[in-house]
Amino acid sequence: MARSIERYLRMMPKARGVRCVEHFWYPAADVHRTRDGWVVKVELAGVAPDELELRIEGDTLRVVGCRRDEVLSESVSCHQLEITYSRFEKTIRFPCPIEGASIERRYKDGLLVLRLKSQEECD
Image (cartoon, rainbow, N blue to C red; front, side, top):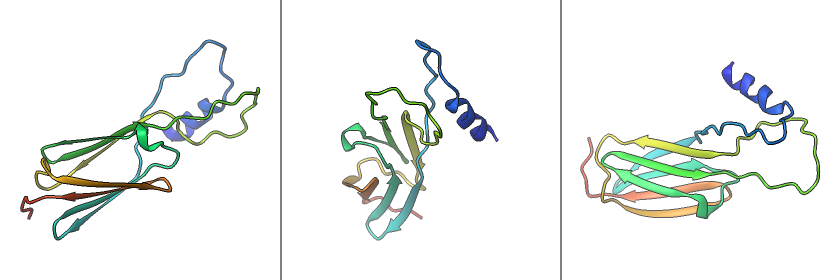
């Protein structure tokens, strides 16, 4: 229900000079175990690759960035707003440490695919 209220409030006209509080959004992710590590897929449609930052600490991976809206050069009246444009953070905890893992990164068609290769044994 909170999300539907938030969407409704975003559809209301904004007063000039008043800035809405930015909210984080949390993209969906899939995590797969492989023989030599992990494959992580994060859904990031509309995010520029240079807006992405990866952080690994202990057993945690953080994907941080921002999805920005295009600036329209003409006056528009919004009819429907469902896409969140703001900073995001996706935090994934693994059952074992991944710090020091090598990372292969591929970003295509709005999907970030990370291959984490680690020597750590994980039960």
